[in-house]
Length: 441
Image (cartoon, rainbow, N blue to C red):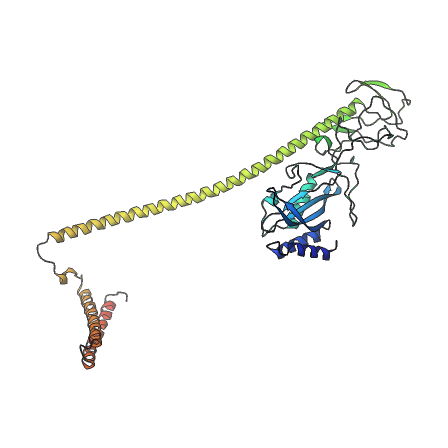
């Protein structure tokens, strides 16, 4: 599908269905531009509650490099109608000749779980970043593997092949390395799904390039055209095991030596038949690979738990600092409040003493002497202020008398002129008193 068709399909899918049309369209087209193996389509998605909804999905393959070879992993990315506010839903869709390999990132149903999805941020997260994280994750732990071959067709040669075959009774095929009989994925317009690392019997992929040998039979037969060379000697746990016997052995063809096998005695020849050492090496390699995989998974899970606990510890430490600051602030406020309460109680005691003294006095209180000043300048200022306020009240009541026709206009103007002159003199006196006493205002 051409980029023009992609844009047309995306536009029709997001129109009248998605909240953020422009953001969703731009994000999808950017992902399709970088990853040509994906294609957009509008399809029905059924949720766990049973409800269904037509959503835009990106379906196809992404290139994943695993141990030097590139494979196309089939995936499907569903976008919710409020994208990018909600994280997408990602699934691995294996072809009929593939099986899902469950891990901490992919479940049995093929759903993908990544920290990038869990910590999805509408402002910084996008589809190209998600696909890049998936490629990096799948390159370490492929989510699919090819189905094991069921049975050998009739008439097939029973002799050892250049590459080992899968047998449920012996070591499984490693997931990669120099013995992986799969060709890299071919890129192009007519891209087909390549074989994926075989993983029968539940064993994890091997990280050590040990050769794997076919199951032993009751009697060994030399191949009609034996291979020209065999894998070099390999080692497991520091022990070196012999390679396949050379076809140019000095022992004549057909001459056999009796050795004890895994379940009994088996006849071995010098033309490449499996010996007890080969079977033992395969079993040791399989067990060591499985133990290493278990330890790696356990270590990864422990590391994730430790990182979560460290984050929680950092959050708790920050909360502790905030609580200590609040407690210190409350203690300061409590001290200030106690001080204010003590001052108020002292003032309350003084007021009570004054009231008791006034109530016990026999002579009547002189209002003019109730307020006294400490200096003649202050007394002059106080008297001028009192006369100024009284003059202001007199002018106000003269205006009220004029409004009610109690006095005529000539009388009003005469008294107002006299009072205004007096008020001017009083205010001039107050200004001089404040200047003399170095008082503000």
